[in-house]
Length: 102
Length: 130
Image (cartoon, rainbow over all chains, first blue to last red; front, side):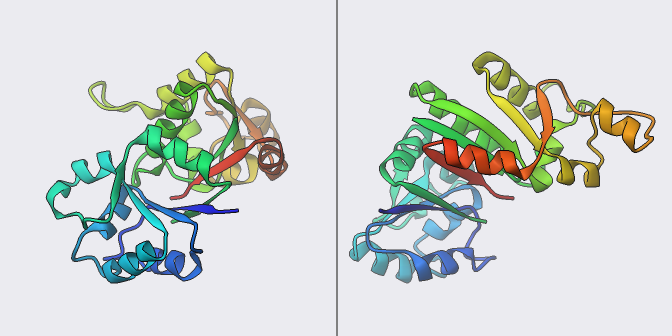
């Protein structure tokens, strides 16, 4: 039974994503929302940890609208999958539990 | 699929209540059902009927009410969170001898039991934190 983790805080200002990463299992997914999309930057504090998780099979998603609203389109790490609200709903159906980190 | 939503963010200061609203719209657009939206902690500020945002700005208060009306969704506000923050319905304004009440139409005051009931009777419960 896999879990979708949503994170809406930036790893530049909060340790929310770090807490999420520490409990994330191999088949889980992480969705970065709102200021959480700052964590999708190549230069973000937890960027390396996200790459390591991704190599273990955890897909990292980020909200396309929130990235655009913050002008970050060209600075996002290459493994990050962009998604919209339709995709968000599909992710909550694919994963049985949704754990929100805020 | 049946969804329930837990909103813990106020309409301003953070984005999460708007994210919750857009998520609900996407859920309904895909043909799923939203059983209940539970407003908890600072999320209860979404339920005031006295807010008057500028006309050229997003009016999230109206949006929640219209969403509920059009799709017959229950909007439940945590009573303990609401009383602390000054959101009262008529009954509570009489009980606490206040001179006004401000719970918007379409919202009802309820308890955490309704959050638990929503989690039990829905396929998915999604929380939008402050």
